[in-house]
Length: 216
Image (tube, rainbow, N blue to C red):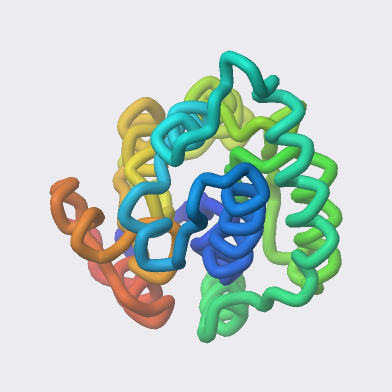
């Protein structure tokens, strides 16, 4: 097989939570007189760092503390996150990869304890050797975390694939020196993903095919 390790992003890549995130942000914007946001607009504008995305959406971070806004978002998100589900085909994909001997791990900008709770809730902890999240709730860059993550794995970078759903995932893959594929079911629209110059898929079955392809 071409890849021996798969590093998964969590939000939008394994868990189908873009609609929830757009709904929470819509409520927060409307409560501040910022007009609200729909899912399609969210997927066309979402970006890292999250503080810049909030500024794009009209939040006044000079008068509203970013930490308070972030805490408000996470509070509302966590109240509803288990109403979300894994993406169709995601569970089957990770189970198949494990059965053929591919090592899997998660690298997320989520807070590490929240991430661990979610992975356990969905009953998939057994599939992942490492689960790495940030030590805070503010979804800043996970590039440094990625370097620590792959060092702990001791992975062959030439045979490691990062799977994500945003430009930041692609950038982190570059920092780690691994290949990347992006799935268009998450927080970025397909149009935006295609502009990045990385392979873009629409299903987890396609990811299986990429991993199982013959090494070149």
